[in-house]
Image (cartoon, rainbow, N blue to C red; front, side, top):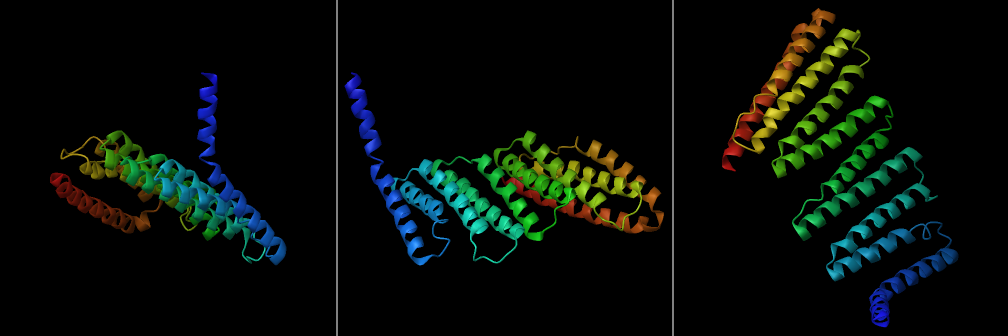
Length: 283
């Protein structure tokens, strides 16, 4: 019995021998070419080529569990080339931005490949992709303040929660998604503008954005069902009144402009609600 198990194990390992052989041959050829041509980047590209081989093997076998690690290694290998290649004359922050972009695209492809192959949505892959995409924007724009990180990361995570809740019909996912987006936007727009002076104004802007987050819950809930979800409007209305009062109290000269901007956003949300109302009825 033990011999049969050992034989089966060896046969299972032997079926991957050609894959390992191709990886070793390509790695050796790239090292040899780099020594001859002295490009200083062919050696760095070995992980990316290994990922391509694994990715191609997964496509050939029609097995997405080989495609997924192949894409991950391709993303990491591309990041390695971007970060360490000596002929690329750009700043390190820009290199990091492009590295995050390569890995974000790799994880996005993972999401779609698993979706197409299994008809299941790997939201964990989309979380990673959107977070890396937000880091791409931050590093390419070269703005490294705490508020920038809070804004982009919260919006990226919140959007994934909204998509997840919209596709799965779960209100418990739409709520944190809308609140995360509103919280990140409120903290950023409330406290990042140096022209806005006074704590009352900044706090007022932040609370108004928090209120819009609760209104978003009502708007996006139309994707799920045909019922009017009214309870988020209670905390949203309270926050809106308190935030407007604080802003007007801190800067009464710009009260009309502030109320006009808030009203414009309110009209956009009402219009979106009507669109989702019709969309939800079609479902």
